Length: 134
Image 1: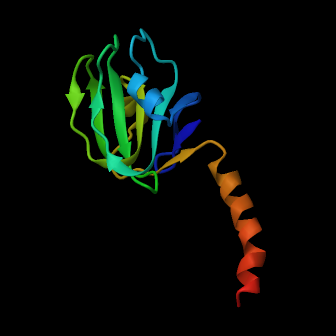
Image 2: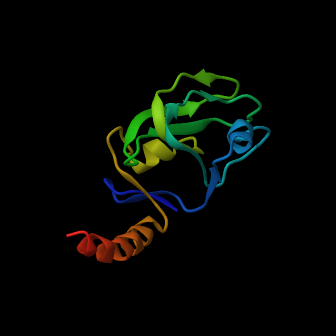
Image 3: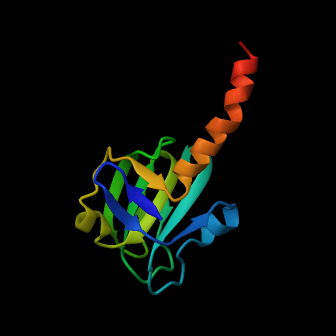
């Protein structure tokens, strides 16, 4: 699940993650629908232009920085187009109209499902190590 923490809305309840070069290249190619979202994870800041080759549906595209803050939005991107991107850590593709319906804007902060719990576990594990360094 991906939520817009700034607006208190849910952008998608199901998300596919494309983290390998092959998964990112394939993306939504040849799909005739998108029920949830597709998250492209680059693992670091990288130039992220998006190409909608082979797609059959319009989509909303959000570029995110390392904090998961939206730095660019393209609404209703049509198939067979190239959207010049920007340096992003993540790109989120959603069904067309999601951005408008959820009032999502550049600058909004997103969260990924399980992220808060994972962050709490990491903090708890690192706390003893930090005390030992004092």
